[in-house]
Length: 106
Image: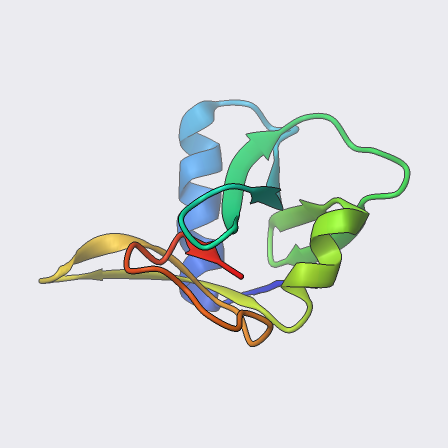
């Protein structure tokens, strides 16, 4: 299951609060596509499936479907805000190679 750093958890909570819906979850998934074969997908969701893998990081609940969970085992989601820009990054020890954009892996 993917983990969230404190920085990522704080930023996700801020973004969820800005949405104004108290019943949101962060869904992280792996989808076919991208220049390396697989790509990450993150979005707010209100639907929970029975077989979702669920983890809580502070006030943030993260859902991952079982097919994606196998690719995200040991991965971590971080958020950085600095001079080079701001954004979320996923560090995934299961990725054998990644593309230049950082959103695609195999």
